[in-house]
Image (cartoon, rainbow, N blue to C red; front, top):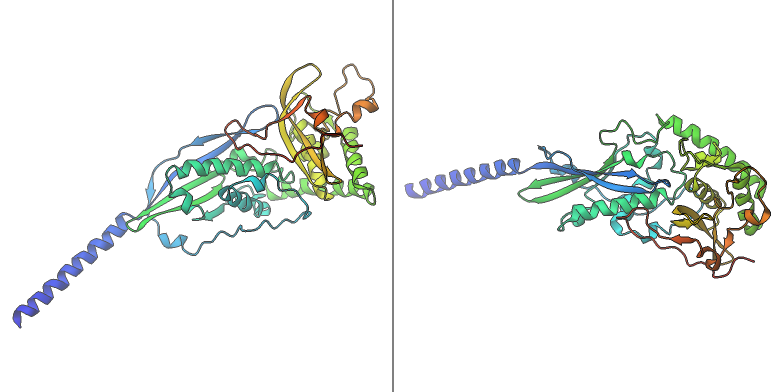
Length: 373
């Protein structure tokens, strides 16, 4: 009996020791490592983004894994507060991971106006990051998502994506590894574009755009789709000037085109896209190269629109050429690239579908062969 008691006591001691080791091991291996951030930077005249991976420190901190429990991907649907007919051609070509990033940012448009809001995805990318080179793949998907977001939603003109960072945090325990992903402003003061310092600033600019949009749309109510497209095309030609010095603010966005009346091809294309979205006409912005009358090939942006079940190209920028020495724009030049089919556009417009050299190649709707008659 005495031997049984001693044996029982020793068993309890051993269990206690093992339990203590387990607890210590749990604490020792509960750490989070910040693997790095991704920064998008802009290069080239048209402002198409390129990507650079910026590793951060590998300092570890203790964290409770329960903070990740119960976090779900709340971005399962795009709740569009604009026209339901807005095209999602770029979004629909993204992978599921990239779509999740796109949705997370899109659904937080209002919050992003603060310039410091943190978009937290929790463990939404657990499966991807658990794979070999999963972090590299997530970086690629982030880039594609950013490209699709800013070139499909011209109303999000207030972000400077060069100041936005995606952070991958790794939580390691004896029980396994978990990943937390979020997007924030990193070490930047804000990820708002230059000239914006607060949400109030953004909303002030939005109010100006909204007021002008209502004026434009009020002039085309009751018109056919063809007439609406033509009137908006003409409005932009008549009111916007091409900014040749590349020194002015907002030359790549709708504020520059609609309010400042000064922009480059990207601004023209985004303004046209924005107004097409607002009147419910299917469209998409097109990225590629154009060869001008001087036989110079350069990065370029224009639009495709859907009219009577067919797709046609519209290049507002080239229909508003800079006339050397003054002079009047002829009617022929004014509509040289208005509702054109591939027979015309393929002569000097080559879509690439690539916003960056390393980025995803997006495809576009097939153009009508013939011009619109």
